[in-house]
Image (cartoon, rainbow, N blue to C red; front, side, top):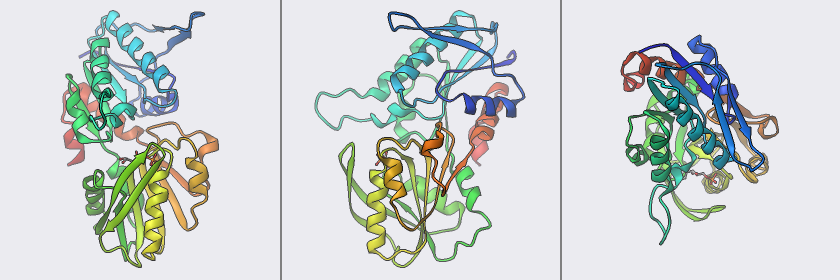
Length: 312
Ligand code: R5P
């Protein structure tokens, strides 16, 4: 395989630049323009003939715009005779539309997976999909990373006596158990029901959380409804110190206001899979970088080494 060439869409250039720095390759320029008829145009500005091309673009707001940019960049790389094209999507937002839970709806995650392959993606490198089964929606190989090791590392060496890891829902309980095992901690989980996009109800928390310090871990925080609800239930159980952890810190809608209003939250730990602009950064927020992990995965993909091996 020839050299690695990395391009970035407009969604998260900082992350693309950080992983290029780790890879010791330059971030190759691409021109992305909007024509007067509101259509997008893309031109890759360096030769990538027979190259191992990686295009970095998490699907963050405005998602449709960023998705279209990614599709056009994939198509442009294919047309430019790249040897292999990997879509690097640290946050695949459409993964939340992964099942038919209402009549006459589209399972959009599957459609978007098809669109990416049709546009030219030969592989996908992604992180912490909303549910494991989304991996199987892709007809091309997918390397599905998680940030649990990066997040756990943050807590190593800290006093964690009398601490329990809490997942707000059962869907995330497996990842939470994995995280808890890394820190040698017990785990508990909430029984959550989503009432609307903005509101969830947690009926109960299963596990011995009473009077403990808690680390609440979720795959993402979107509008913060889940975290607010789980914290309310945990306070009813007289928990002590509270730390909130998530991989994708989207902080949409009123999330930041909601989190700011949560007394007793010592720390909010998240990663840079998505850009977090200054106005969304709280004084008790810690943002860990996944760039080293993504760069390592790209290196392994490039040389044909195991990516799963990175997690063993
Ligand atoms: C849902 O199943 C996920 O694991 C997260 O709990 C959810 O996406 C968080 O969304 P929000 O912050 O809007 O409640």
